[in-house]
Length: 72
Image (cartoon, rainbow, N blue to C red; front, top):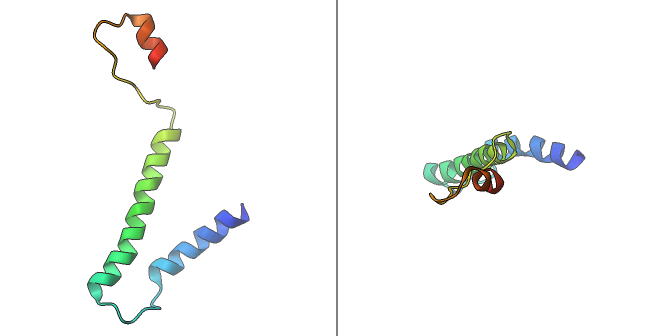
């Protein structure tokens, strides 16, 4: 749990740091906002997977109701 808290505390430091001064504005936007977008999309994907809604599979048209219940 301590590692997770360390990572959470470190993320704003990475996003807001001014350590590299040789990059232009586009490079700064690229490495700051790309990380933020990847974290956002990973969080959205993880919440969808761990949400109460299960993944619903597409079933063949000739499946009867018990088969559909079993596959989902």
